[in-house]
Structures are given as C-alpha cells and as structure tokens.
Length: 254
Length: 250
Image (cartoon, each protein chain N blue to C red):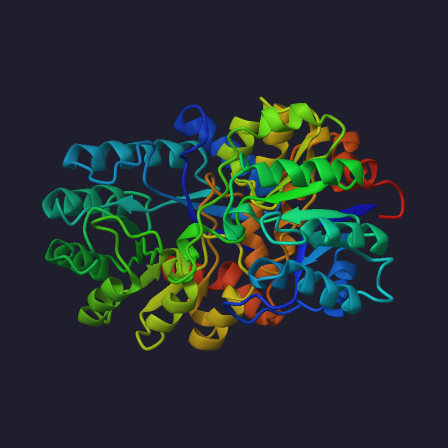
C-alpha cells in the first residue's frame, strides 16, 4: 500500500495549481495507486492563525477521511496554539506540520521545544517542512530561507518515541543530518535528487528512515513515483518506503 | 522513444567510461534511448582554452565508449572564441558531436559568442545555453532568458535551446514566446506542476524539449514534467524525442 506523507492542498498563493482540491487530488492519487495521503492546507502557511486554515480544511476533507489524513499546521509562537492542539487531537488528526521559516522561529526556539513535548504527550508525529519551494523560485516579496536543521539530532534524541518527519530536505541536508540522527527522524523523498538518488540515500541512511512523499500538487506527483522506479531497492526496502514506514508511524487506518 | 537532451557526467564517481555506464544504467530504468552529454567533468564556470579541450576530450572518451547511446555537445566559451571555433571543428565538423553548450562565463549576448554562433549556423547544429532567473541572484555571467533573446534575434537562422526554461519558468517561457528560434529545454529545476503545460500553451509543443540535467538531477523528477503534464500524447512524443531528433539531425 502506497502512502504519500507529503501532500499540501488548497490555494498556493503565488500561482494557479491543478489537482489542489481534495477530490481532484484523490483522482490523481488513483491514477498512481496511492491509497492514502497525509495532507495539510497551504493556507496554514500564511494565514495568521493556522487554526483557521485547519478548521477550513477539516470541512473540505469531510467524507474523504478514508483517503486523506489531515495533518494540522501548528505555529507554536502564535497565541493559544496549545488549546488548538487539544482540539486537533479531538478531531483525530494524524499528525502536526510545522513551517519554522515561514512562522519565524528556529528549531532551538523554546516554543518549538514546547510543541514537541505537547506532540509527544498526544502521540502525534511532527512534520518539519524545510522548504516549500526552491529558494531560487521564490516570489520577490516572499523570500524564505530553508530551515536550519542543526540541532535536530539532539532534539530527536531527547524525544526518542516521537517521530520527526523532515519534509522537502535535499540530498546534502538529508545526508549530513541523517547519519547523526536517531531512528525517530525520517525524511521524505520529494526533494531527493541525482540519478538513482532514493536508492543511494536508502543505502546511506537505511530504508526504514525514508518515506514516500510527493509534495504534490505543487510538484508533479509523478516525480516521486518515478524516483521509486529509478531507485535500486530490494522489495522489502521498497515496501518500507512506499508505505510500511508510514503505517508504522501512524498505525493502521491512517 | 525518449531522448534526453541535457545530461552531464558530473556528480557521478569514476572515469568518463564508468560515469557513462552509470548514467545509462539509470536511463534504462525509464527506457531513455539516448542522452546528450556535455561540459566534461570539471564544471569550471570560467574555463580557459585548455579546459574547453580537456572537457571535450572527456566527453569524446565517453562517446567512444558508448557511441550507440550517447550524443555529445561541445563546450564553448565567448571568452575564447578562437579556441572555441577550433573545438567546433575538432568535435563537430571532424568529430561525432552534434551541438554546443554555452554556460555561465558571460551573458549569451556577449560579442565573443558571435563567431561561435555563426559557425554553428554553418554546421547546422543547435546551441544549448544555460539560463536562469534566480530570486537569490544570478552569478555575474549567468544569462537570463533576456540575454538569450538578444542573441537569438541577432541570428534568426540559429537554433537555441534555453536550458532550464529560464529557471523561473513562468517568466522564462513568456520571455521567449516571440523568438521562434528558441526552444524551451525543460530540464533541471524542481518538477513544478504546470511548467510543461505553460510551455506547450505559449510556444507550441514543437518548441519544447525534454532534458533532465542528470546526473545531478534524477531522470525521474524531470520525466515527471512530461509524463505528469496535462498534454496530449502527440505533444508528449514531440517533447520526449521528435523535436530534438529533428534539431540534431539524428
């Protein structure tokens, strides 16, 4: 079973996107035999209150929860996030997603530490988005640096039972960080490049550390599908990346 | 059939021969028939004349190793027009290569490129020019699509491939729309949804060419721009092979 751990739906502020509504995205998933996607709303990045974006998105996913697992965007520097997190638990979200660079804090910020503690108490994995778009392509009024991942290994070591999923890391970031990180740190493949790149990274970090993620529809969904075709992987490793690791993190039914 | 119009043997370990073998090993996973390779192994942005020759020697040795699958483009530089012309004679007129690559040492409309382009017209080969519009700022000699338009309008009989679709493809594709001797090479940037659809809409599929920028890029992410695009099968065929086949006289 294939699970896409990195979908972001809704309105991308800087240009038109196809397949960005939940129903259209499910059609795209069907074309590629993707059973389930973990999805968050684009609006969670730039709305002042991420809660409003999550609430809107929850309504749009109604009746589609068997295909799309809601991931709630959280900004731990914004007032009342802890109360809102409790609400997300009641909603049954699959995990949390953070955009430190867009929300103006670093991984060494006490607010981030507080979020991780709260996530751990609620048994919600945390997705850390390194970048949303290649920095060279940013809108001139919205240039946002990638997340500085230094220190993540230490943070992860202090919370060994909390899955930390790094989304949209490129090869140097995953390679330099991955080897030093404990086993609760995972990377999605959406930005892993180079010929045979996913297979080579699996050799370096172990396939149990990689998750199939597309970053669609901002990126063509086919990219990660074809990366799996290009990767040299044993069947067992392939199954782990495509969905086994994700199922282990969220459990069956997510 | 799939022909990859933009590959390198860099970021792959080993000799030219082993790098070529590895490139083609992964190309086989996508049924890519042939790859165009250029730039040698040094990636020197400001090559001296001897660097051009050494880089082209590197590509020639790869072509000799896998002549059935690899096609070469000669590295040329407007900073060294005489040496570049000698390389065009050696590698194209009297050798197996079928085009040239211009990179980032000077803007595309630098006067040093004029004799090089004139010789390409005589030889009937295309010119692959790196282009980017970077929000983070271009390098000093790094061309934008505007520089390429300036050169291409001076030489309407020459055929140009605009590498990376200008990087910031939403602008790049618009900038070349009215310059019909520039073709968009899709290669190299993130596989952002919509790039290929816009290229086909603005330029027509006959002016759009698949390239990957492998080995630094995967074939996968770049092929996704073609296979994931909402275009008709006829256009897909033009982009994947027919256009570049026509350009290089394969």
